[in-house]
Amino acid sequence: MATAPATALRLVLFGVLGPPAGLIAGLAALRLTGPTGLDPFPGLLVLLPVTYFLGLVPALVTGLVDAVLAAHGTRYRLLLTTVTGAAVGFMPIAAAIGVAGLLRPAILLWAIIGAAPAALCAWLAGLRDP
Image (cartoon, rainbow, N blue to C red; front, side, top):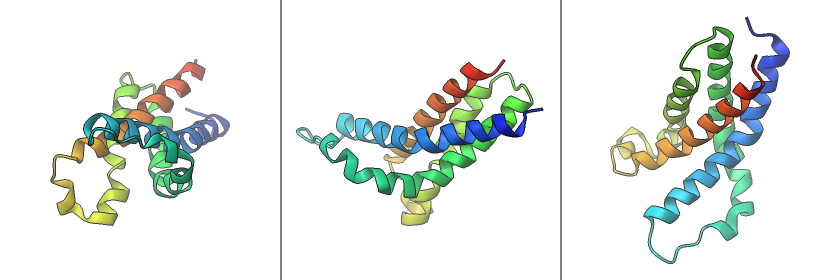
């Protein structure tokens, strides 16, 4: 069973690193799939507060799932945390545009925004695990 400090450290990692990593993943995906000549990276600092506002709760939920999976010694913890991050990443978008708006091709972009930071944070947290 995981100790409270280990779970708290994992939640801090996901909470601090998750939202900016999702922002970078989303901007990178937009740059690859968006119109040519689009350079969204100069506005990175302006988007950071909004990123924490929209992404902190999904990041903490994903971190909590990762902590539970680590506590039980789940074999495919990294994969399951990544899938959870992709699923939980839809929460702010579903609340903002409704579930019907998720039935568009851009659905993969929202999955990337949740899955990439979940995989990164789970991998970093796993480096500390015994």
